[in-house]
Amino acid sequence: MTTTRGRIDKRQAILEGAFTVFAREGYAQACVQAIAREAGVAKPTVYNHMTDKATLFRHALEAAARTVLDERIAALEPLTAPGDDLRATLEQVAGRLLGLHTDGRSCALRRLLYSEVTHFPDILDIVKDSGPDRLTRALADRLARLALAGRLRAADPDLAAEQFLALLLGPLEARTQLGTRTLADAELRAIATSAVDTFARAWDLS
Image 1: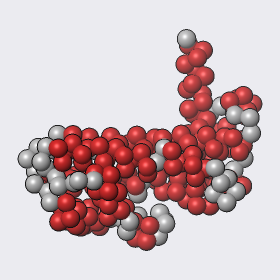
Image 2 (image 1 turned 90 degrees about the horizontal axis):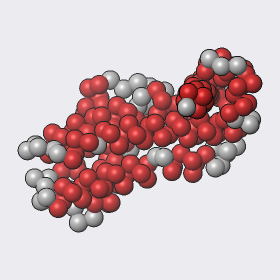
Image 3 (image 1 turned 45 degrees about the horizontal axis):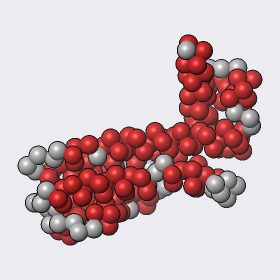
């Protein structure tokens, strides 16, 4: 049991270390020795867990994408019991999603995806499986429950979720200059408020 736990912990450390090094140096410049040093393990240990650098890269991106997704789905939790002020709850959720979308891990993940997708076409599917589609479905589920409770006029919760996320996240690539510019909290709040304003008018919040 201890041996298995230790192997899992080392694998996690390797994946986190690999993502940190790939994000900092890019795939081409990253070396396994630097990844081992970042992870706090010996270089042979990296190869014991991952056969080569390309395999490590794919697994590191998949693990990072899964972490990002888990955090974003957790951010939707207030919508399960929004209380009397649904609009305020939506703004709370919107603000949290914006914060997560613009944090260091998320920005690094997108930069790696943009820079390496031509060399690793499969990483688009790897990240997508743990990314936007699942977040949209999770949000649609919560909006459907609100519609059933009469809190939201959403005959098509999937479309409502898609539009909400588009209103919220659409401006960010330009505003953050592809993740290279940090947005002030006030600017993030303004984006969240504007997105909820438009969404509320379109879907008749109550």
